[in-house]
Length: 154
Image 1 (spheres, rainbow, N blue to C red):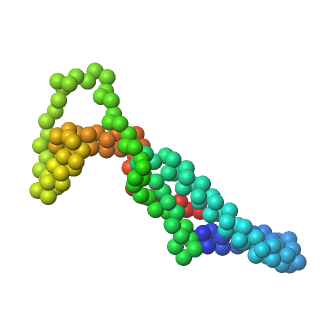
Image 2 (image 1 turned 45 degrees about the horizontal axis):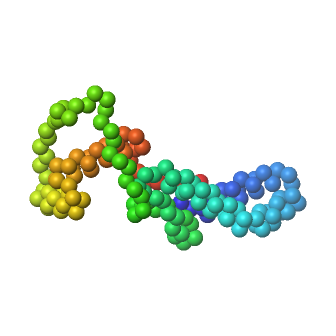
């Protein structure tokens, strides 16, 4: 996100309004605008910071950081290592444990090995681990949407 473009657009809009008032007012206004540029930049950075805090508060297991690139903020979404994953969703009303479905999934051998390894680390069977991962993913998709990248334009 380039704040410099937003600031340039703001300056242009103000200068157009100042020209309507006449050359003396336009000159004084331009000088005032130049003096206020650091304060305008700082205020825009604070607004970006507030937006990042609001977005982060709405994410369950991710957070948004601000990284400055050539003086302009860039938003970076990352997994929050301190986040506690939400509990798996409760079964819908009327769910019976006997009401099971079976599914066969073909996947590459390396992925099966990875899933088996992750299940062992979690202390679960492969079946329980896969059901838990799918339940959590489906719950997040169904209630909050997918959060992979967040952008903010000013």
